[in-house]
Length: 82
Image 1: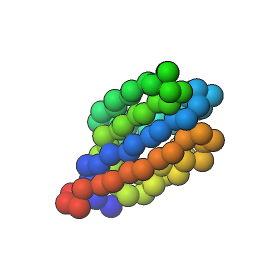
Image 2: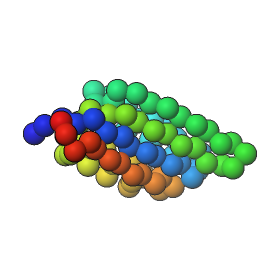
Image 3: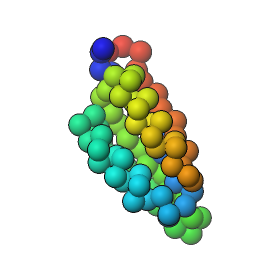
Image 4: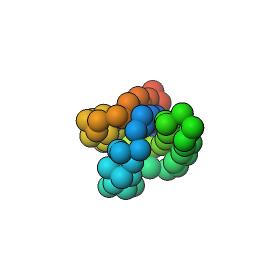
């Protein structure tokens, strides 16, 4: 399968899920090109954006695992060209 550039947007609605999310991201470090985190402590929300180079299967696996964590919302997109 072809690897494409894309993004994964993650919203954490609770501090309780931070360790689990960081662990899942670390396990997928081989596909991650960049990571930007924006904690909004006063709102109780954090946003993480990952830039990835991955296959659709790799993105699907990571987003599925992240989305299964309570308090986490995930969206992703991949470039059409590879």
